Image 1 (cartoon, one colour):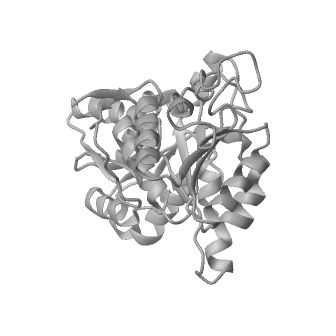
Image 2 (cartoon, rainbow, N blue to C red; image 1 turned 30 degrees about the horizontal axis):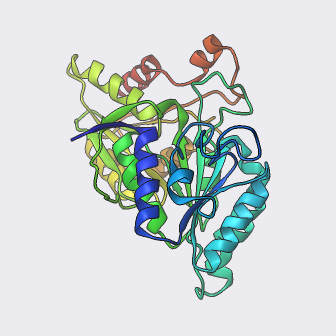
Amino acid sequence: MPVKTMRDAINEALHQAMAADDSVFVIGEDVAGCMGSNGKPGSVGGVFGVTTGIYDKFGPLRCVDTPISESAIVGAAAGAALVGMRPVAEIMFADFVGVCMDQLVNQMGKFRYMFGGKTTCPAVIRFAAGGGFSAAAQHSQSMYQVMTSFPGLKVVIPSNAYDAKGLMLQAIAEDDPVLFFEPKALYQESCEVPDEMYTIPFGKAAILREGDDCTVVAFGQMVGRAAAAIDALAEEGITCDLIDPRTSSPLDTATILESVEATGRLVVVDESPPRCGLTADIAGLAADRAFHALKGPIKQVCAPHSPTPFAPELEAAYLPSVEKIIAAIRGTMS
């Protein structure tokens, strides 16, 4: 099976979906690149190169470069979806979600409910999310924890290239709006990815490690760090379940609770700040519905309640590390 980066896997999913369905198109800032400048149109393919080659293959009507206006991008995607198209809009950095919050939360997320189920809004909104690039406080937030709180929106957070392709193809096939958060620190991470089209259902977590002593739930780029922590502890005889939810809305609560029931311990890892975040949400879920099974305290491993620092050394200290995850797992067992 060929090995592909997450960037290439998402790019391949977009190409295949557009070739299979004429209603699919991409729209956003620099998705073609160099439009209106001296460069060749299509020569950039987005700020992270995820849409490379789409303009050349499908042309300007299906690869639409836009002005710098996130509200216009998402508004156009919402309108196109209402009339039968399947737009895939790019908002570059997840931090910019606030600029188009009304279009996402008050419009797209509520169309099906406000119109009594008589219409659908099959739009995908892509975001590059998270830290690890020393991109400072305004370009390093994950934001998926915020958007998970709004009903009507589906939220996807892939942790590897295989999942990214399958989840993107599923997102494009969905009849509801999907927010697709791509951890930008993982764009160059690679694994085996099939050439053919395939989908991964939403709301179905992946169990990446199995063990008896603790359940570890991790999101996005933290999945790899959690796996490294669990592998290190396995050498000492401590074994853990590692659960990657893949989607935070819908959330596979059944898999998480079943694991907690079996291990009696829970550590939740996410790079977002702790207040009103996914770590607190899942900790509360376990405390409410699996309290009788717990043998120790639930531990949350996340960033401080602070903006992301710019300096590489400070950002490294800010983000959850393998060492912090190991300490948390030990803390549930002491």
